Structure formats: structure tokens, C-alpha cells
Image (cartoon, rainbow, N blue to C red):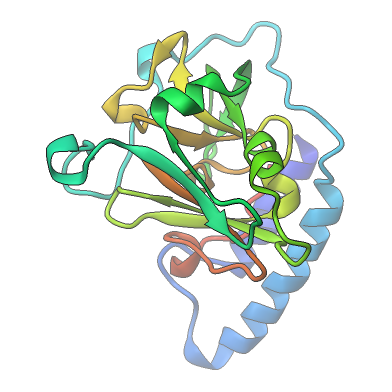
Length: 230
């Protein structure tokens, strides 16, 4: 908790909502942010697992719903065809996984925290396929150090460092609290992991793209911290 508070304070000095700072300061801010990310990556080494406090209650129906489209995004098979998750980019074996095929892969269930940049935490149980399992199947190339997660929510996306994406608690989730994902929580599949703040957990997922370089993200490009570890 102390590490998270310290990092939140540091991030507040370096970034602001929907702003990159005045033009004359951008170079200094970007340099400071890059140094901050190195500190975060060291402090938040992924050698630990998220644990829910013994007395914590599940958020249930109170688990917040959010999207950037004017309306809740819905996959329209008549217009788009059947939904499938694409896994590609810098990989040896690109994949296209319809929902049924995704569900046939090893599915894990975990009750973990969801950390919001606004300071609140919610608890839910997620079931899905580890991103590390997708990576095992797709075989990323040696220079693939980042992963971009894309959605059909008005083009929303966020890129991650590879280590965070391959954390055992980073899932492509297809169920929440024992039920298939609903539209408000990112159906038919979404990214979820307690190792990143909520805005990095892309909902309405369509593509997982391995990259040699990071390519920002919807909120990262608007002044939010890119690394956003917890």
C-alpha cells in the first residue's frame, strides 16, 4: 500500500488528466516520466501475486461500468461477423480465436482487486485465459517487448510492457463472478489484471498485438501515466 501511495503521488507530479503540460515543459516532463517508469518497474517487480483482504466484500452489481463510446458498446454479428480475438504482430504464429475456441483453452479463475486511478478498489472474481497462454501459442519474436490491447469501444487501446502482460494474473477474461461478461463489463472478452490500474484493463477486446516498441494508449496519450502499475 505504501508503494502504491508513493507512486500515485509521483505520478501526480508528472502527469495530469487530459494534459501533457505546457509546451516549454514537455521535454522535462517526458524525461521525468521515463525515469519514474524505471523506478516503478523496479519497485513493482512482478514477483508477487495480488491478494484480497480477508474481510473484503465483492463489488457485485456495484462494480463500476465505463466506456468511451456514447452508448454501451455491443458487438453486432450482423454487421461485423462473429466475434473473434486476433493475436498477432511480432509473433511466429498469428492466431484467430472465436469465443468458443478461446473458452477451450486452459481457463483460470481468480478473485482479485481492481485498482482505479481515482483511488477506489473493487473486488470481483474473473475467469479467463492467461495472456501468457496466448503468448505460448503465438510465440512472440525476441524483440517483442510490448503488447497492445485493442477494443471495439471507439478504438480504445492501451499498450503494456511484456512482463506485466505475461504476469500469471493477467487474463483475457470471459466471465465475471461466475457469469459470462455482460455488455457493461466488456463482453464478449476483456483484459483484466490487478497489476495495472483500471484504465489499462481494456474492455471489449478484439486484438492482442505484440510489438517491438510501445505505442501509447487512449488515456496514456492524454496525460495519464503509461506504466500505471499497482
